[in-house]
Image (cartoon, rainbow over all chains, first blue to last red; front, side):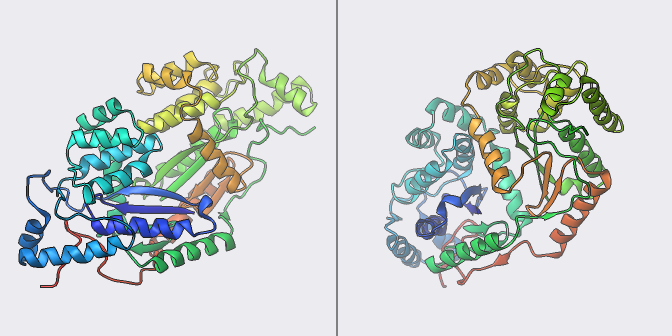
Length: 239
Length: 239
């Protein structure tokens, strides 16, 4: 089963949704036959790198609410995170641009380390108060995820490196009409939008699995026989 | 539309099928909205690298036929290739192991050069009589496909490099019950097995396209609202 997950490392519901999906997967009997594709999405491609502004200042300005109201909203999100054992430290949080983090995750994917790095990026932003728009922070995170630090630094310095991979995921999101994240797509067919309750993830896994098991993998449109190769040779001469 | 193509660079029907698909795509009005994923398949993982044996010797031994009969069978395949403007030179052909070629194609994919390299690998084997199991030949082909020759040589020297990517494609083929190549899969749903006639490819493209256009991209299983992030923020406080 293919599971595609669009998310942004600075998106609290993405971190929460990721853990709800992972919890559902941990209890899913066919977990070994699932494969997650982590896809990039930037909530705000124009977001500046960390400038010293606090998250509640940004929210208050954006929504025309008081700092106190913004803090209360954040506390509600932190409470949801806490239920999953995740500490969201909104006091220390450094709002920033996530494009380089996404590029780095795409590099990590070529080394099969993107799942590990993704978790570290979320944790750095939401729990540890680190600026994941800062290249030194990013290369340290890359190293802690088992990547070669020098290679990671090269990727980070070259703004074009893996940029197309990030853009492709975002283009696919647009094509699918995805405007918010997290967004989960099971077998290109069943969607779960947002940090839904654990039950919704369990149900989506089960639904996609049942269908996959019940239906033939595909419909054969071939019209002729004996035009394939097998067993080391394609030419099957008549004796 | 996603088009997955399993093939082996030493498989004549794969080269023919590839060109039939590409011809059908050239006339397909929605070509710009298609994306081909080139997947690895080894017809004979245990095939030795080129040992001096000619293809007709191998076929004659394998099928218990005469050298003359093997040559006739090859002529039939060459005639099909010729209709597509492809020269199959069975006299010069060097039967070999294709694992390194597949690994190299996977490296090329990380540089968006796998489509270009694949065509060069097929042509080298079927038309130019080059040994695509030979690492010097492969690194020269990599360079001609726009890849960094030194990087390509590194990949070739490290037997583990990109080996998992090749194995994953092959595991997926087994999972789908694919035993022969070429194998074409449109939108994970419609299959074309072998070097089918051009009409079959046109029809498969049309069928997959019609369905994609008619049906919604996916079925939404979400149960709650307001748990996604958009527009640079996830927290949407009540005013």
